[in-house]
Image (cartoon, rainbow, N blue to C red; front, side, top):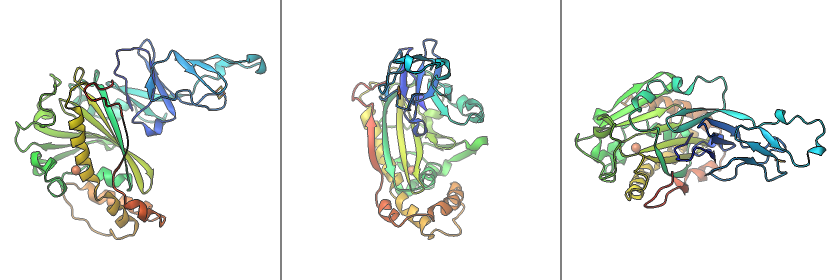
Length: 354
Ligand code: FES
Ligand SMILES: [Fe+2]
């Protein structure tokens, strides 16, 4: 997934937020048609794009100098006489399927998958008034967590834990007893939690410009959307984090947090505060994950878990067990580590990038 919001119609970038697609690059042509390609030269597989983002009129391979245009065609081969009979039209870049939702480009390596908007069900309609067509990327951070990806996902699909681990943060303004969860086809869902007081506003976002078309639910409640299988977002009228969950091994994962602002709000002075507030909440959410991982791996977590509003506890725990049993002894040390930030890019206090 990446965001294409830009004033420039010609653009090339490696995909951020798409760890599956680290190998791919994407570009918007002059007609603003988005295409994605594997970031692999057809000659010997060297990378064609080496920066996170930028603008280009085509792709140039620094290994032996082959050149491709934005449509992926091989347009120049150095010392072509050494390739007798070569038909360059057979050596265009390998394209990857990609589809757009607002300004976001979703890359999909499965050609048989259902169309993006169809598989997202009602989610695009819910979010259509939040200005996602002109949304701006502010910054991204990554955190490594020593647990199976499903253990952390579980924490973002229920609010039963708010009173216990977020007493000074989320629990102060969200009423978990009012949470309702809607399950949709293809694994997507929405979890909506009301503010304790309808007029409450996030102090970390007070004064930030709001999307004028945002519906009331995004002001007085906290709806959180789960794009199955690994993207969760609690959108707000003042800006939206996309949280993506990436497995690294059966016992470790990376969570990426990408922040997006309404058009015109990207340079607001409150962004650093707002993001660090969110990181504090993320730390609270991740504090037990490595120990839960150990419990799963060693078979200590057995049998029955109470059926609570976050019923996903039960199914996730059951699904997690078999893979964790395969753990190596070294995993115990790995579990001792909590959330570890590995990168933040894009943030410039006072004036964010696109
Ligand atoms: S690998 Fe790209 S030109 Fe050789
Ligand atoms: Fe939480």
